[in-house]
Image (cartoon, helix red, strand yellow):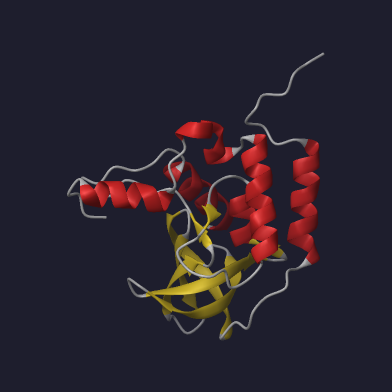
Length: 183
């Protein structure tokens, strides 16, 4: 009998993910719904997109936190570049729907991003490329995000393959700042 590698998602995980992504989620009130084209993926939870009238949007995915990517002398985290590269492959150049929830630091807009009927925020969490963001109160798809993260953790997919050696993006940023490296 062939054994499944710990970091591969099970058929059950993939079916659960598909159901969660296609059923639609219960959302709080987005301030605006926008259609935009993805120009660039900055990291696993931030993209740059342009609207039809060429308004540049720097979008921060709402309620998730992806591992950090290296910037200059600042080191990155395991799976930071993989999360960014996955998003770039999936969304680069595509037209997406954006449910905007308001401004965020660094001139970004908090958003849920949709690739057709797929909630990309939820997808990234389900694939183990991001965790639920605990820095603020969850605003949308809270139970779905918690379930997706729990399943990814249990299956050891994406960044959860590190098990007990995993360091959250928030902990990583604190540790790097404490060491005197600007994030």
